[in-house]
Image (cartoon, rainbow, N blue to C red; front, side, top):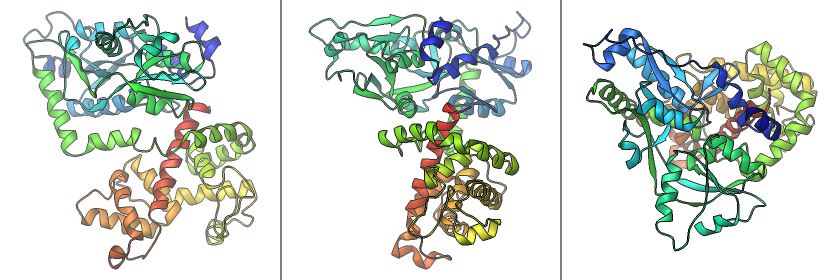
Length: 463
């Protein structure tokens, strides 16, 4: 199956997901009766390992060059720190195995973007919800857009076995006057099915709204036709049991991260910027990645190594600044790939701003300096997002916004909070409170969000 998919879809994002699956181990069963007098939570703490079943998906857990990331990964790493244990991630071959792993108690927790449904409540126990989604019909440009459910009978319509999508379709079927037909795929996961839609091998599928929001940046010709469910809640799942110890601790954990805004900040990390690019922006970027980036990639790589910055982040900055055009010039006189001002060029020792090597090296040094200026206590990724805002608007204006953020009760070290106050530094009523005066505060918002998108696209599409 993998060989067949690789031949058909070798240039699509999900192949990166599939290649990583061999790196995962299976859960180590607890020795029988070893901890028979201990609660489930105490057993986990004694073993020092939490067995977690998940799935490879941009909404949950996926590999990068430097390790792993994803919403579920971040949440679970925080929970393991909360418990003081390590995590053994388990990635089954298909969704049915994932459901069986948790319902049969082969793992401790399922952190896999699972929808809470009445049918699943009979098999497993759910935590507090951390996100809400709707289920949507997905099609590709060039395929007739279905306007109503029975239009789906005019094409090949596939969904993944044992997903909540099947349950929703059965519920929908009960409201229709004619049969609605679909194929239940027992082998592929939802990402692979979406990839088949994009490749034109099938016509329609169902995806959660959060998944398609992320995937459309990589597959810009995908569209949602209509919802087939009301908003549904996502949560972690555990085996049904009379032992409440692990369940209770999970509930304590979610209550804590909701109250201190950690959950909101993690959601913002993955979803806060994804709507800043439209279809044209994304397609233009992909075209320029093919035609322009190869000329400058080695210079970005060299500058990144020299200043300890991911070259793809530098390339994303360069694209936002000039669309990778060495002789770009703005009406205000900034020039080159990294669009440096005269003062900035002098500051970083650049003589020719339109020379691509000098411009990239100068921009990399300037960003490195901005990043170093951000207080060391601020963790990633907020430190990088704040440094990007500083690169665009200047450290002083950023500090004005951070001071306002703190003064009015929000966190000046979190980009999610600071970005709410940046527009105020351009408004007359707030000018008396600003040390550095007026600045166009909306500009760094668009600047940072665009770069975050370009950076994501480069991570997925460029090795």
